[in-house]
Amino acid sequence: ATPTALMVGTGRGAQLGILIKGPEVLESTRRVDTVLLDKTGTVTTGRMSLHEVYVAPGRAEEDVLRLAGALEHASEHPVARAIATGAQECVGGLPAPEHFENVPGRGVRGRVDGRDVAVGRFPGALPATLADAKNAAEAAGRTAVVVRLDGTAAGVLAVADTVKETSAGAVRELRALGLTPMLLTGDNRAVAEAVAREVGIGPADVIAEVLPEDKVAVVERLRNEGRTVAMVGDGVNDAAALATADLGLAMGTGTDAAIEASDLTLVRGDLRVAADAIRLARATLSTIK
Ligand code: ADP
Ligand code: MG
Image (cartoon, rainbow, N blue to C red; front, side):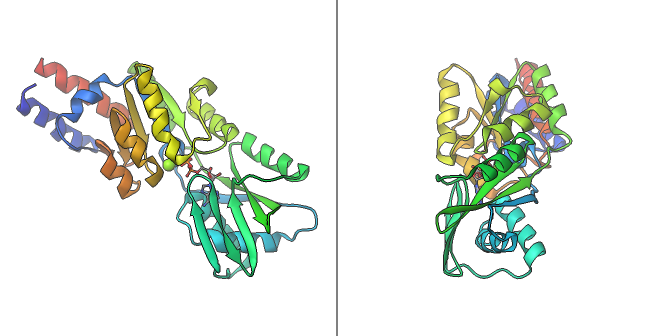
């Protein structure tokens, strides 16, 4: 490959809204056959809002919201921001937690008003009424998290995200290029499948309930199957997987960690540009041959 033609490729990339780390990236872009898409913030907007609040019999909705909101106020996660904002709107001011711990891929836990509070997906019993509410929310594509007070399930909070307008079209374009799009997420399987269905990805191509540290293992497994894997992500949690993939694509709207770990950045956070990048790489390299 002549350096001049590759430079033309990278210059054209900038016009399309693709930042390319180096000309050598175009070669791995051309070979890609599988595109792993992170769900939250990549396929969806990641701008979540609190949609429903369910409480166990005998619990006050206000209490559950105030304690959960207080803890989530200290976290940057999109689920946390939705809960903290929703709680503030419903109950007003939130107390400052006495203790706070972020557990990546699971949620937050700590102490608020002298009580042990956990919000997220932590192990523990769930009474039938809350389990039913959680299942119904998840089947509708919403992320549902459990609020535990002093170890007992007190409520379920359902958070709604929206699929980006451009995502279904992007999935179609990737397929038209002969690639296999797959959805990768830490979220619950029912939620993941509902989002996948909306963008045209079947359940067999959904990899759900993956802890942040296991995303790398998923990329490695697919590579061991002989695939050449592109990963598209936005979060801090995605950085290691982006670096492990044959090609890492970061959403320009995402975190610095994701951008630094990737080979390509999609400046506007529009997934259709991932298809543009692959088309560009193929075109650039075929003119060089
Ligand atoms: P994704 O892969 O979709 O970006 P994460 O790995 O960050 O998701 O989180 C996976 C799941 O862990 C979330 O869907 C949610 O159920 C739970 N979770 C993570 N962080 C929080 C939080 N701050 N509060 C509540 N739940 C959380
Ligand atoms: Mg994400």
